[in-house]
Image 1 (cartoon, helix red, strand yellow):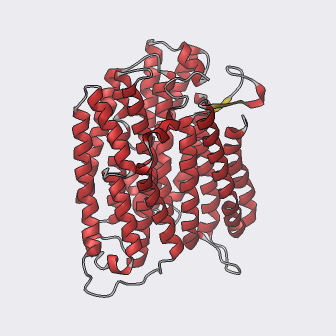
Image 2 (cartoon, rainbow, N blue to C red; image 1 turned 45 degrees about the vertical axis):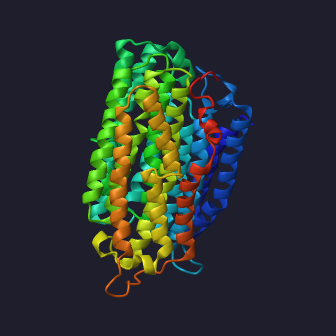
Image 3 (cartoon, one colour; image 1 turned 180 degrees about the vertical axis):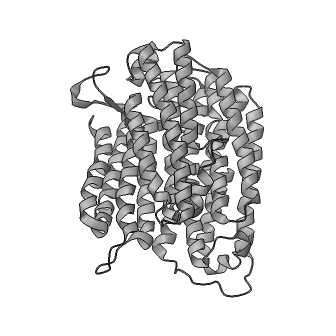
Length: 493
């Protein structure tokens, strides 16, 4: 069973290598065949971690750190592995309408590129979830960047190429800063294994400098305001499937690494003042990102600025954990709330981008003011957008409500009530821009809605399924979220 984390990485890697010589049609079929295997593997990992209440640890080549490399699947890894597998599977099925190759039809360049890139992105995220040393995590970050960036500009237009290059510049800057921090930490501690680093690092100036530059680099990749400038343009012209993956999963990879860095490597060296700064940036992102979404006239850009805002919630857990280090009720609520927010946001935002893509394809544009008649012409699509919006708002009993309630309770318990005000204000602003879209879509159109692209039950079904999952998470009892705490607040292997 110890090999399962490594297999979760190797399965999409091997499929990606095998898909390239098969062409677009063969790559599509191979990807669809591998998806259920990867989902089953992630579920098995989650079940084992939940039953044993301990992480799964595997030493590559049977060499233990610091000489070897360890793969470690804890509760956070298990929850995100399942989330990633479900989102990737839903997006892949949705994308068949855009990048599928019918039997006898000529193969297209976009289709040939999409399927191997999707497998590479899946492999990179899995590697970021189970790798346990800082340099292997750097490899995962680079693979994630170079798999996600081409997805932004699959159509080859000038606007999407410019957006992809801007994304690449931010990502490379983040990589350079992260790698510099890795070198500083290795020089100070003599190892890069996260568990060993927790025992060795101290609050020396080289270590603090390393954490600072690594955090700055990862914030650029996570698109936390003010380093979010690459994200809205990247979404504006990207295919709906690519936008769903970018928003739901890609930005989460660097965020998970931030959690490993702050509450793994630096668990014994709390940095409460720095954590307050991170949460302040998160609160600013919630408010300004929501205001930008309220002012936006295009649907995909509205959802993109919503991503900027929702990412801010993830950083509210930092000062709450730094204020009460160790295992406590408040720390458990803050940790669980942050992780549930990441999971519920992944499902809701993927559903929202897929629904936006369906509406844009049907209307031939994504101008919010001209979506009248969408409720009658595509009720399932608008219902999907509404359900995803309810989860993002934190309306009970959705997954977003469970996450925000846990964060709010932790903020009150830690005596940091001001973060509770941010959470409540962000929910109201989210309701404002979700209402804008629904009000426009439910308005009667003056003429028949154009049929630029027909809506199939498969596309609507995948988007609706993700939205339903984001809401259904709120129906789970609190004890069901105990999985995400396994191996996190106490990093002993």
